[in-house]
Length: 188
Image (cartoon, rainbow, N blue to C red; front, side):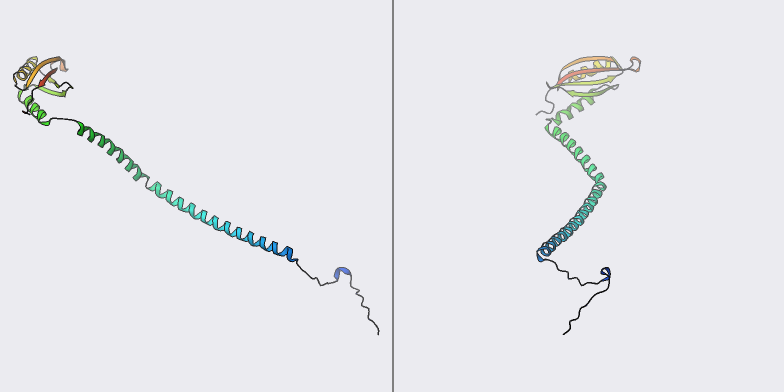
């Protein structure tokens, strides 16, 4: 039998050859696992970035609300400060031991005996129970008259003139300071 010899006369660069592509499993499996891990990591990164964006939007919304309500917070702070100041005053008033009847009786006494052209400008009680009266008058004699009426009152003792001086108006007005003590006006 005659054997046939085949000779290809096509130049080598134009020859189409069948190529068999084969991948070794020892390389393909690790590459595939690595690609799966990379894809999972990229997906996880995308999810985290989207969560970060949502949280930043939430923070921005809360900051806008805080800024809108800042006026209310400042007003609340101001009211709390005022309340604290008022509480201090209330506590101070509660701590004062004042005999109200004593002062009502004393003021009624002063109103009934003070001369017509004399005015009281201040009343103060010292720690030792002495009462200091400050006033203004138009005549020196009115101060003497007021002191005499105080001295003759059964509820007053120890009347003393502490000071008398010009109070302005070209010497037409005089200021005076009188000190005395009260004797149990209310009968308690």
